[in-house]
Length: 120
Image 1: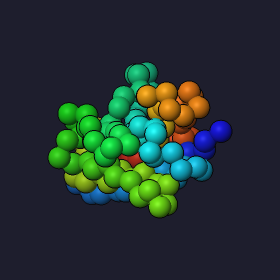
Image 2 (image 1 turned 180 degrees about the vertical axis):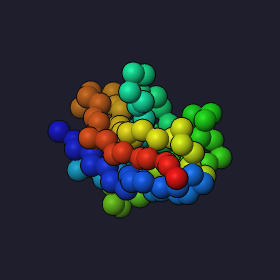
Image 3 (image 1 turned 90 degrees about the horizontal axis):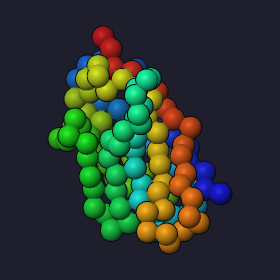
C-alpha cells in the first residue's frame, strides 16, 4: 500500500507563496500520475495540477501562471509551488497518485491533506 504524506501548508498573506510537498513511500512516479487536488467544504474535490510519468503537466485555469507542479524522482516527492496566493485558494490540499494506465496496483492513493490559509 502506497502512503502519501503532505507537508508545507500554513497561513500566508495574499500575494505570498507556499510550497507543498508530497512524499511517497514507494517509487511510483514512473507509472502513476501524480496530482494535487483541493476541496472546499460543500463542493467536489477539484484538480489543481497533475504531472504524468512522462512529465506532462496540467493545471486548473484558476491557478495557471501562479502554481507549478514538479517532482524529484530520487526523493519520491512531488511539489506544488504556489505563488501569488489569493484568499480563494484557502482550503485543504490533497496529494493523489492515480493508476491511470493500470500499470500499478489498480488502486489510487490519497494523502491526508494539508491546510492552506490565505489571509491578511
